[in-house]
Image (cartoon, helix red, strand yellow):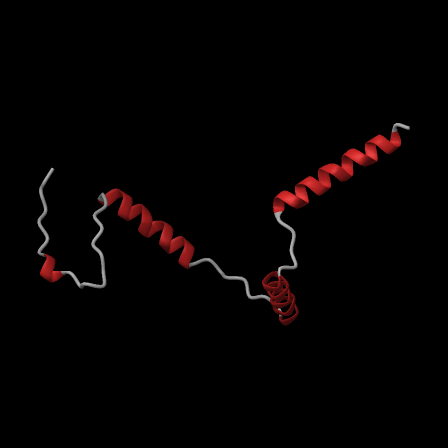
Length: 86
């Protein structure tokens, strides 16, 4: 394996240098090309309106956490099964 020396004065101060094996870099380039060629989804005006409304509700604190929802659903199923067994 060869040793590589990089002169720090040649590197832009706002950028960082990262060394990766050639194979990993080539795999990254193939992946990046695949991602770049994929079509992106453009939401309709109605979908954008719903998304914005949802974001506003979230900012206001009008939401339920995943943990709370799971617990409520589990409790709901549990209480229904008890009622059916009576």
